[in-house]
Length: 357
Image (cartoon, rainbow, N blue to C red; front, side, top):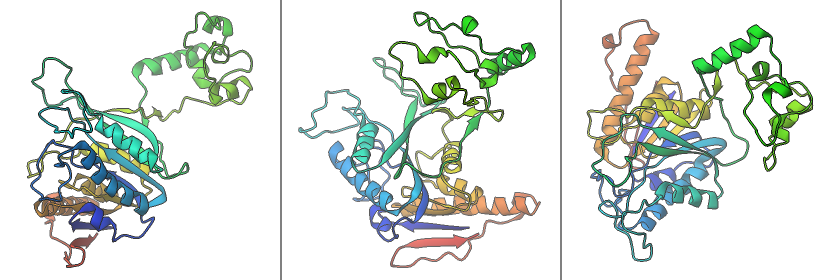
């Protein structure tokens, strides 16, 4: 397992990598007109217009497309901006004052135009979001995360979450009562469609299925299979398929970086989209959370960060995570193992800090 951190411009550094190199990319670029990370003239997010920002970001994303393996996955977290105090727009863009820019979705559409497949828009819901002083709109408490791939076939490990107590009680009642699907009881009246129960944990008898006869409804292949007697069990005893709304608190960090990734969000992306022993890239490393999580999960990691101070802090965090992991593996308290750097090196060619663990 190796970890490497490059200091420099993301697009420039990515050009040093060969095609189809990484299994998974998890990143959160600087948002437009939100913060100044003091990284100099090449810093993304300080462009005077939204169009310039999107063009610069797409330059990096084009390189990500090139270096991502054919079966790889790309997870992009991107926040939005409002026209006004946060955003200065060119006359050609002319969005109304106070309007939401819808910038993440403009980027996603630009990605689709370049050949990306957008598989999901995941909603990162922040239950502890920062309060806003506005009184003429709702407080924004979420950000989108786009799950994208290069090809229809790609690596994906299904993520499951526990069933609700209500669902478990309903399923247990079906089992205890020996219930089966009954068209009369579960209603097939097209004028009064209702959602039937789990139908004996998802096992359907051949015959009439209400989802096949509701006018105007697109028939799902799952319902066709059930009607034809090809039983498809929708009840997985290990849990339900992960939904797209993720309730994850924001992360706290006492270093220089303003907006660290929450570890649980990164963990889910890597677990779902990177095979064991695979490689993870974060071209906007920031505080290094993606590297910390990749280290814990046993993946090779490559990070790129424009600000040298952030890169050093990220390196320190990753080394500390490695030391803790090794200490736990040896059965000793983490505090007994000092997080010493493993032969770091810096070369003029690529500014790469590297270490193996």
